[in-house]
Picture 1 (cartoon, rainbow, N blue to C red):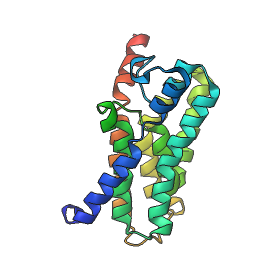
Picture 2 (cartoon, rainbow, N blue to C red):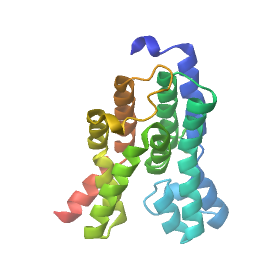
Picture 3 (cartoon, rainbow, N blue to C red):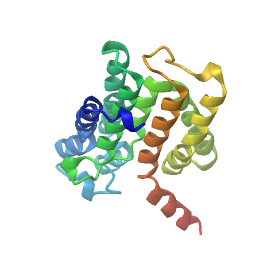
Picture 4 (cartoon, rainbow, N blue to C red):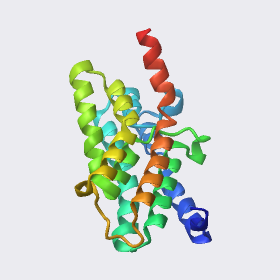
Length: 211
């Protein structure tokens, strides 16, 4: 893996980090209500908190779509327009989610990566997104709590990746230059760890409330 850390791939990571770091929720909440979302509600710079702070479905949906496209469009462009090598694409994907979760402009206080991560996985392997949605729907049907459903579905991400690796018909985009299941697995796990890093506190708080 070390030989993949070329100057080109490092530049891709930096560029994608900058794209991912655009603070969508911060900008739209500021425009709508002149509030600093990092100091309001949960402090999370994402869809759910932007809706709670502004009480605007339009703002919530706008943030959701832009953050999703922020992950989807760059990865799709790298795969199918620029025809880049698979490792470079996945390095870029890691940069996108790092930028979203830890934007330098907000002192590294960003979102939890669900929308941006969904956009990334839609391009990389949409079955992972389907798996997440299925678990989310099951949990929500029983508990009726969005944050709890988000958290449990996200913690199950490694299971979706494992399933994709064990069923050949779940593998997509294998025609991409230098594609391999190893690259897919390693980089998907890295992306998952970055997303989960912003859910540990949520999971802890939910557990404490039940205790």
